[in-house]
Length: 245
Image (cartoon, rainbow, N blue to C red):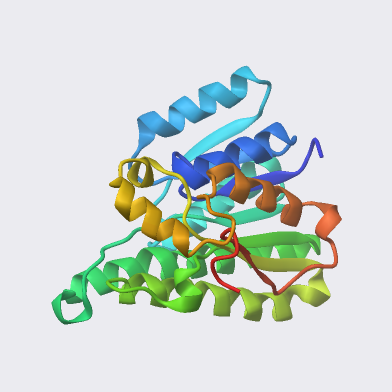
């Protein structure tokens, strides 16, 4: 594992940070991408380097084609290869459809969907040349089932699943695997601060009767990135406590 290289987009906090930590602690040389939270990215870098990790941080807005290209090219120039790309960067701008502004739809699509396309396109060239690679898209159960007030987010997360399946078909003969993870309700500062009655209603929809953790998602990323998953491609795996089945 010592020489394997991974990029995690949107890796300065939340699920992205947990994924970055898991991959770094598993022996990957890591490129941590952030758009605007430099202090948080630096804190993650310092923490992982203190544990012996090799970590670089790269500022890039993945929704911008050239920024995404710069991110992938940095990996190739710094480490000579790219083994794992985790497309995690994402935003929400929720509103009921009649109230949703056009720019709220466009911005979510630009970051969540176009950003994933940008990174996968540039990474594909590198991985095809080395005849190996893994791409993992962080989708959402909302991309499978929809959600009130999230027309834009649901469209973007369904889109990254469709892209993943196409890339899995295109990349298979080059030794490239692609999969998606669809998290459900994950413990965050937001869910911790929800009123108890709201939390109880949310939990009723989850057979395991608990929220997931960012580490639950990170554990699956670690598995899908590894040779233990060498015969798994084109799949969507839910991390949702059974909420969608």
